[in-house]
Length: 496
Image (cartoon, rainbow, N blue to C red; front, side):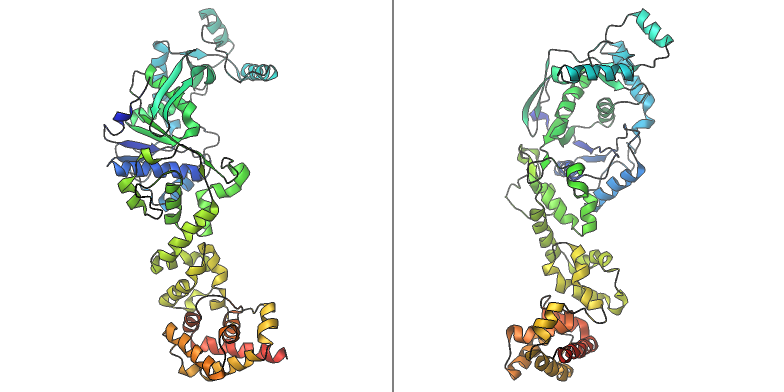
């Protein structure tokens, strides 16, 4: 069986992202959603969000909210799904038990599925036996040819059957993958006849997803390569239902720098999109980085917006090789967007990281000036909390080393006293003018470089490094500058 590459965009494109609400939005799931979104926009198609809750034990509403909020934060808007409606409104798979059973009954009637009465205890014993003998775990298909008498006996015992789909062996399941190329899977590697409906009546993922994709007329399934064996199973189900399958495309997995798969067990919360939102990463940076992680822009650009990528994205430029998640590389992208996005937007996004301070002491324009002065040295917006602290503290905490190496010197009091005397001559509204005035005062007393700037920085911010000195003086204003210089001069006197 195969689905041909020349049908890739034959029909109106309909793609979906279908995460299970059993955990927070994973970086890998976000990239998969991104590639589906871009493919749909590239071909004028439809992007569907569908939440799959076949795991009724682990599925939680909090994870549903996290997934939806994370996708929205990244700017991935969907055409059908939660909050949107449309011809296929959001639903829970656990609400569709009768619908799945209808299709399962169809398979039983055409003898491609059967009722299986094996108990949990029997299946556990089978796995243990296979483990002891070094065999790969698989169902031994013992329930495939039960007699009517055996079924009657099991039912009398109160056993509630599951439904298993017959996996014929030996056989190769093959298809053309839009990313990986030609793929062939031996059915002997699929674990034997597979459960499609549990004894509880809940459909198993590999069955429910096929029915859902048929219902939603999905034309392309773009997902991670860890689903390749699932695809083989699902193609068998499509065949049994006498329905044409969608085009499949399997993107490479995301590894860390040590070539280990990204997982919460090994990497903690850093595998979740919400971690980066809380750290002050720009969604534009995340989107740009995840897009280029396994996809090459036709013009080999590195920096591009979601909209720009959507104009040229296609699956033939997606790499077959594993992607590597490099935080340093992500930080490079993030720093770029912090510096390049409109200052009004960056200030708005920075405000949550400034809530410990009394923001009312500055106007909206002043706050934008503060963020503008600081953003060139930021990797993430969360760093602005410490970087901006001296602007808000009544008296900045002067680093101990700065007190010893800068303020106790003979030059510091000279610089600070003349600065104090000349404050009335500063044009505080103009950062460039403030810097020129400082340089002019330096010429007057024969000082420049760190001899001139370090005492002033120490007095104003408590350290010898930071944002542009002219901008710092302009933002603080005459009253704050005067108070801080007077306080620093007291340190100069105390250190003598």
